Length: 343
Image: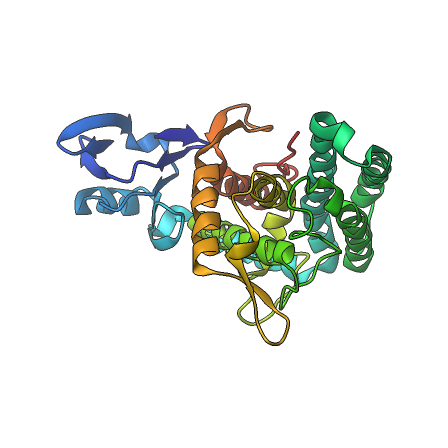
C-alpha cells in the first residue's frame, strides 16, 4: 500500500478493501494489513483480484472519492465515482486544451522535454558504464545535441514546430542506438526505427514494449478520470489513445528502451525468439513474447525515487503518478505539468 498525491495505491494481488467506521481497511486473507481514514483520499486504486466491499463503494460514491479496479498487470477494469468527483469538469478542461492549438502546444512541450532529457540520459548511462566498448565520441556528440535542444523545445510556439524538433532529436538518438547493443550484434543489428510492421528483431522488441507501455499509460489516465483518446501533441484519430501516446513519450527511453537493451545485452532475448513472415515483418515467437512479458512485469516491480515527489515507488506506478500530476495541472492545482525526468 502506498499513499501518493491523496491517492491510495493497493498493489497486493490478494488484498480486499472494506469499510469500517469511515476507514478504508485492507485485508490480506483474514488479517488486517492496513487502515486509513477514508476522508484522507480523493481516489483509491486497487490492483487486486479480490475487489472491495459494497459498503466501501457506497461510501466512495457519497464522498466523491474515485475507486478504480485494475488487474495486477495494470489493465483497467472499472471505476466507481460519485457526482461530486468532478471528472466531468476535468474532462471538459482536457477537451478545451485539446481544441486549442496553442494550449495543446504548451501542454505537449513538457512531454517532449521529458522525452529528450530521458533519451539523453540513456546515452549518458551507456557512456558511464561501457565507454570502452562503444564509439564514445558518437554517443557524446548525440548527447550534447539532445542537451542543446532542451531549451528551444520549451520555446516552441506551434505543434508543427514541436513535432519537427521532436522528429529531429529522435533521429539523432536512434542514429546511435546500435552502439548501445553490446552483445549478439550479428542477430540484433539496428539501422533505425521501422514499424507497422517492424522489419528487424530490435524493432519487433521495441514495438511490443511500446505497446505495453501505451496500454499502461491509457489505463493510468482513465483511472484518474482523463480521456485517454483525446491528446495534445497526438491529435484525434478513431481508436487511438492519443493522450496515452503523449504521456508515454517521456517514459519510452528509461522504461521501454532500456529494458530492450538489457534483454538483448544479457541474452534473455535471442535470435530464436523471433520469426520472419513472408512479407518481411519480424515478430516475436510465443516463447520470445513470454520472455519479454515476464521481464516487463519484473521491471515494473523495481523501485525508483520519483524525481518530483522524492519518494520511492515501483516503476509500474510511474504512469499513474504522472497521470495524477497531469490531472492536477489541468484542474489548476499545478501551474505546469512536471514531466518525469530520469537520470
